[in-house]
Amino acid sequence: MKRMLRLCLAAALFLPLLLCSGCAPFFFFRPNSSASSQAPVVSRPAASQQQPVLSAAPSAVQSDLRYCRQLLSGNELDLYLRVLEAVQNAEPIVTCSSSDLDTMRRMVDYVHADYPELFWLLGVNASTITTVNGVPTEATIEFRYSEEAADLAAAQARVEAAAQECLSGIDPAWSDYDKIKAVYDWVIRRTEYDVEAADQSLYTVLVSGRGVCAGYARTTQYLLNRLGIPCTYVTGTARGGAHGWNLVLADGDWYYLDPTWGDPLFSDGEKDPDYVSYNYFCVTGEELFQTHTPDDTFPLPQCTATACNYFARNGLLLDRYDYDTVLDIMRRAVAQRQDASFRFTSSQALAQAVEALTRQYDLLDLVKDADGGAGILDISTVRHSTNEELNIFTVYFTFR
Image 1 (cartoon, rainbow, N blue to C red):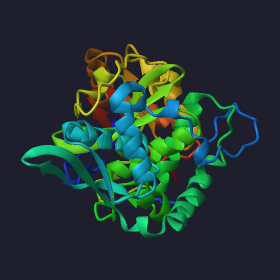
Image 2: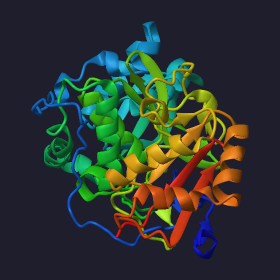
Image 3: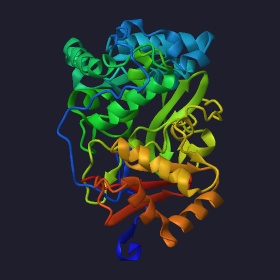
Image 4: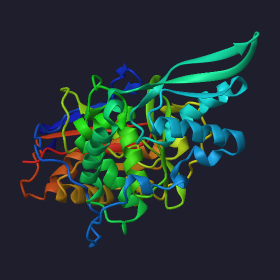
């Protein structure tokens, strides 16, 4: 009987659509056309019984959360602080000696990476050098600001109101992992990937619910900083296109986090508003650099820890394929009305799983057993994808 069922073998596809400096999320085969019109909520860890408490105001975010600032001393730090003060006040220019121009321009990049809340800073328009009798003396950098700089108080109030939708649902007593996951889920479920978004700051994501990779990553950075979790913004390329993501400190270890790649589109071009992918949630440098290449704007730490990786944390990391183990994972996912993903520790283990699941038809039996005759699932069609770079196998359920 099982061979009469349709087994749809669908590989995850990546759409290399690049505009501005943002790259598009993954495209997946759509398993379910259902959608939710409800506003996104913060996902609370099941074990927490604490009441949510509002986070500190932006002014209370301490300087030790600023990754680039911690790399500086002496003249570099002085120039950094001058740039920071100028941008905070939306001043049109900042000056320095001509010999410091290159360093000052680099400090603009550092401030931009450290302070997502300075959303009105779009970049640098121009830099000029003044000479006296042919001798360079003073240099000037002209900033490029967004239209929100004309009324910062109103724009900041809109950002704060949106941020509180997320922050008010997160308890300070939660673990770093739970805080990061809550912010990650909230940003992804709230944001529509839109290459036509007005800018690439957190403003469009928080105020309009739209943006590209820079907006996803900088919103995530801002909210985590507000929760006291060090997080910075990293730029580079992913699969050959310009991209931005996060570096985050969780429980004393550094990880990479890519919220844009947690927000896949499906093959029909639409997004399931409730779907979140955790393939790139707190991954190591070795894992990330298979697809991502960071710029050399500033030095990055070694990211080797795995304790806060989504799959390791949730018992979804397997060293071999086992029917009963996978069935338990699928039953837990069905109980939560979620798709099931599990990761293998090696490409060999993934290959063995793919052989058993798709060529020996274990996947059909697993879906039937996961449903248990309850009629929760449509078992006539089974869809899946594999991520061979991270050895992840995902099963997409169709819930009745």
